[in-house]
Amino acid sequence: MLFMLITYVVLAIFFIVDLFVIGRRPHVPSTRECVQHIVFFVAMALIFAGLMWWVAGSQPSIEFLSGWLTEYSLSIDNLFVFVIIMANFSVPKELQKYVLSIGITIALVLRGVFILIGAAIVERFTWVFFLFGAFLLYTAVKVARGEDDEEEFHENILIRTLRKVTHVTNDYEGRHLRVKKNGMKFWTPMLIVFITIGTTDLMFAFDSIPAIFGLTKDPFIVFTANVFALLGLQQLYFLLGSLLDKLVYLPLGLSVVLGFIGVKLIMEALHGNTLPFINDGHHITWVPEIPTWLSLVVIVVCIGGAALASVLRMHADKRNGKGNGPKIDTKNVEVAEAKEQ
Image (tube, rainbow, N blue to C red; front, side, top):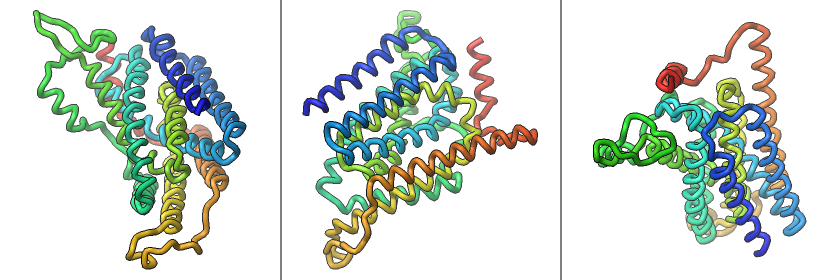
């Protein structure tokens, strides 16, 4: 209990420092700054895994590492959508880090609620793993076929409704959410962007939360894995933003991981089966169990192999004078930059 309390306090400090100390000055992070932040958060995640091993044993530590790597890998694939959102709303470059910080904090709160609900459901209804597993298999097929890619960003119903019922200015006023013009108060586009980033990341959770519940049923591990993945997300945005379209094999690696976890979930559901139309409601004990260490190996091999293959492909294309065909709508990006000037 003390370990959990200290963990929550430290993670809260990380976010406060990131938002109100490091992020207090609007700026475009340099490559060096991004690398330093990413190395720091990765090191903190590994130290946390080591402390968990020391406090609770090897099993929880391996579960955390598996969950953290899965969430981190999925977040890299999701960064492309963030690039499109920033271009769609013409967010000035110097404000993008601040926007990501607030948006990710909103996403963290929403994910926390989602995790609590998911944990309660999993604890009471083991058959839900059948649904989680089937959903992950469906998602894996979509990702492998490229159906999960978005060419443009579409505002969700919450954003469209907000535009109709409130007054929103066309221009940004620094980091201000509310401004007064001609005696009337207006919201700035910053509010729309915050809500968009937060709710969009929550949609991503429909893939990532079931996936991590396939690796561990401990809400504490699920939450901390998500927090450490989100902490490094904004730095990855700036560091990898121009390279996202080059990671051509990452979706394939992610699809294998999601498919593997989907199968693992279904196998676990069969072990604890209570559904009357499957084996007369009895547990199916002959189905083999997949150990957590094997899950970690599969995740590392698939994601690492996909990243390495993408880098080799990128170098090969450079030697041959070819490109991968950028996925980012550069026209929108150019418009956003023109508006800044």
